[in-house]
Each structure stands twice: as C-alpha cells, then as structure tokens.
Image 1: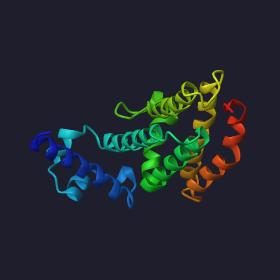
Image 2 (image 1 turned 180 degrees about the vertical axis):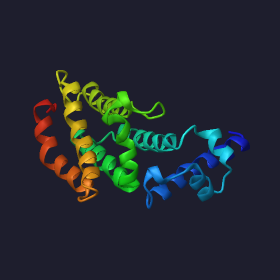
Image 3 (image 1 turned 45 degrees about the vertical axis):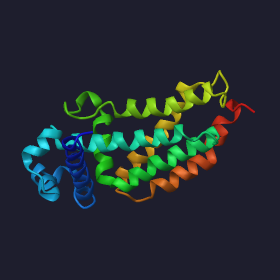
Length: 201
C-alpha cells in the first residue's frame, strides 16, 4: 500500500469515527455534513471524495462491524454451533448498543419499508444480515456440526426476526431496556431448544 493510499484510509476512518462520536449526543437528522467535517477537521470536498451522503457513512460502519463478527466466527474452529450463534447474538447486540439508539434508528429506517426508502438508503441491510447468518448455519451443515436436513432458511428467518425485533422495540421504547440483556436470555433459553434436534451428536 502506498503512502497516499494509507493517508486516504486514515482520512476515511476519521470521517467514520466523527459520525460515531457525534451520534452519541445528536439525532442523525440533526447532523449536517458541516458538523461532521468540522468535527474531524477535514474539508467538505474531502467528505464527498469518500461518501455521497451522510447516510453512506452509517451504512459503511454497519457493514464493516458485522463483516468483522462473521470473520471472527469463521475462525472459531473449536466452538460448537451453539457457542458460535451465542457469540454472534452477543456481538451483534453489543455493537448495536455501542453505536447507540440514534444510529440504530438509521440502520432500520430503510428496511421498514424498502420500497419507500430514499435512493441512497441501504435497503438491502436485512438481506445482508440474513445472508451472513445463513452462511454461518450452512457452514455448520457442511462441517457436519448440523444435520444435512437442517432447514437453514427457516432457522435463519426465525433468528433474524428476533434480532431485528429487539432492535426495533429498543428504538420504539426510546431505550427503555438493554438489548444485550435480552439477547443473552434468547441465546440461553431458546437457541439450544431450537437447534437441539439438528445438532450432530
């Protein structure tokens, strides 16, 4: 990587970090590009070199976070599928809480009604999360952790609706509960019972 490329990556990350920091105290709709560029001390033109809209910053943060979770799970060779799924839920919701309710509202805004989402909204977010989770289950079938007849499509739908339900209700309740606590309860109480009949003994 050249020096110029390294500097470009650092500048891009500065913008991503600035949005994260600003969203800890501000509603997303209240943020302007000027707020972001002033916070990270880059020119407005520099922002547009990397992103077309402020929404794009949030979506990049989101995708990077969850791609990293999947990569870590893929390296967990000595863990059971239950452990991997519990880790996925825990890390998923940990990131949701870490980035806060304002960013979470942006994440889910475009997927509530993707047909009416603005052009720049990441209305494929639901499919992205679905495919990531299904990949984890399909890999478990391939590695003989789950039986060959495991209905990975159905189980992925069941699980992803739980996660999205928790995020949505957290936003609707204006942060009245801790999502990570509920994810742990879901993993402890339901995951074992859901997958018990499909685990290769």
